[in-house]
Image (cartoon, helix red, strand yellow):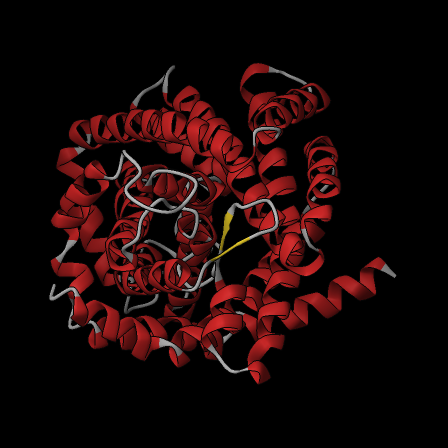
Length: 444
């Protein structure tokens, strides 16, 4: 039965991550970027100024705008930045990194639009907490005949969270801790579950507070280590960039342990892993930004778009450049093992520990961030009475994920990610006039 179900989901996965979906995601981003007159690219530096100013609450909402972005980043900076980049290069060659960059550049416009709509159409729930996201801008921004789209998004998001945001992350942590420190997966899973439970008890305020401290610290530490490696490997960087740009448009032949890849593979895996990492278009991040204490949707949108910039154009780029410049991509390793081999090749004795600790903290914060996303999807479907049962199920799933074989879960999560994107992208296109009007009103 499981084999039949796996085969069915494989076929569905090939469709939902096929050319039509990739064109829809990239096309939506390009359309929004042009409609915004390249504003997200022009406002990167002002966006960072707004982020710094957003450490304090400035309006209605539950968390500071800065912590809203950190909560969003806590969910996006995870296995995708370490294992996902490596997988994209393993399957698509160095050219996959180029297509990840393209996805991120247009994804900044997508993420901006998502946050603008999330703040503009948000509500307060029965407990008085601010709540928003795709299901709410679909419900409040579109006519009633589109309401089913919001329900579909909430269903896909609630289920997908247990894959992309929970079991997969727990499994990645358990695997890397076992390989690096010989800690058994059950011990890792139980420890993660206890730590996550202590945070989740406090709701979005506690999640945002922890994310606001952990995410900047670990991101800066990982970036610093990666930049050190790139400085050491500076002589190899011109050749690495040449490989990336060349193989974005030409096939790469089999070499060493690398099986070779067509251009389509570079595009497909570059875009798919890029979206898996930065989640632009999936509709997850606006759930966090809807809770920001601000009365200005456009300001929060400019802060939100930095999530894609930081996640992919900074952190994923560092991982990818280390892998390509070190030559480790020839070795036949995949996933986190490839990233670890690349760091270890340049910093022997320390590189594998940097990757292990980075992946552990990134994946743990992803569990926290996605718990909030899943909780809000469940609350939309069943009301606030469903929050406590959801949190209990979320904690129980952590040790299960840490100790189980997750090939099927990876496949299911990947498929549900794409299904989440469909209602969100439709809503973004239909509500794009609202985004453009609000943006013009700020005279950016």
